[in-house]
Image 1: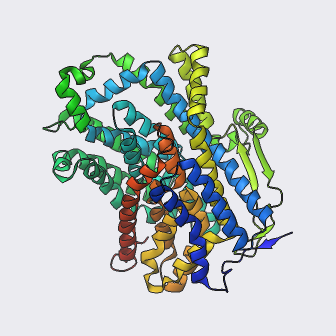
Image 2: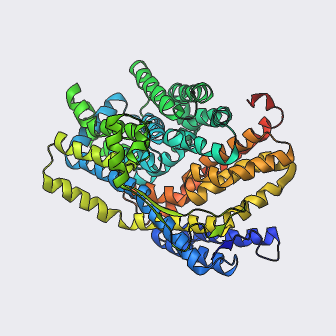
Image 3: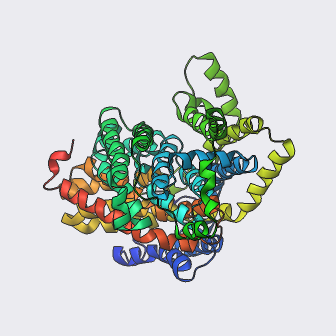
Length: 562
């Protein structure tokens, strides 16, 4: 039997219905920031609260609510959970094999300064991984690298989440922008141009903001030349590529330009003082040889060999995201190439799309059409599989025994059991929120802001990413609503769509999925509440900046709209 979503279940009152829709979200914030629950417990109880609101207030049949939760839980396991498991596994392999000692030394030989290491690893390298893979890979890998370099785990996770703001809109080879074209009818290239005229302001600012968070204003000025090289090179490349090449390459190109520009710059310029954390300064005072490993000399071949796992990771993830290889891996290739045709057949065998019983085409959405619901499992096409292949090749490069290889994998699985449980439950919560209509209710409320809508348009994207954990999902969720509302209030639709995507990037750092991924990557499962408290204020501040930019572009800066 079909069920039609009701977006104003409480006496047809949008405000009261919105307050009801906020209950699971407010509960989640309370559970983590005030009650300080373990992440997996906050996830489980938030899911239960969402199910209760969906059934008791929104009138969603209990069976459909449970099945929508199961659909989200499966998505939380694959592809998201699979990426985290393989990423942490690969990192652990480099540690167990001793390669990470050389990686650490190679970075320290470039710079021992923690501020510059954050720019290289969290900002530039993390942005590259976001552009190539998306999902949780950027934060998982870059945070683990920083911890290996000596950063405090919680600090490393927080820095990487904030740094990941700049590339999210063009992540996973531009999928968030491309996905918006279908439901809105506005060309992805036009949306790409507009996002590329908003985010570069944020991208140029993020490196400075990161260092301000780490060290304060005075210490930030000491490395201002490096900050400018990192941020401005990224921002200019992001603008040029998004406006003249399209949405697929801005992250990858911007990250590479920023990474190489800063690395080359550091060959000719060094800060007058080296910044280390207080704990390191204390250790150095007690033991002067504390930083002696920075002086260890390794050959270029040893350094290349040590970095090879992450070079392989980059190579495989890049290949997995390329057209027409990407559709072939999922069994959707339609060309004539023999090799790709063979891969396509394997992809078909390893791709499963199963209708969710009792849910598929049984919910009528806001457009009056039934909503499709599938358990979609891509074993070969998942980014996590690309990372696993990198790990398998690394086994032979690092000369790891089969016992150590499998033992490391089991160790990673055990460590990640509870974080993966949290990820699955919060994605399940997101699916229940969407299927019941709660997300749409909140979107409709913000759309009532009238002439102030240009200011609040990014908030929709921020809210969407917080709920779903994905800029792509937020764009699909609110894209049509943004377009319709923009036309009503006299706002350019392409600006509203760009605002949704740009606002969404600031919500990534507080998304329950992102929080769980970051904590899992640095071995802090159960301390998700601390990380959320660290990132929340920065998320709100950066969201405010995007709101102001959008409001000005709708008025005095309207010449910036393509």
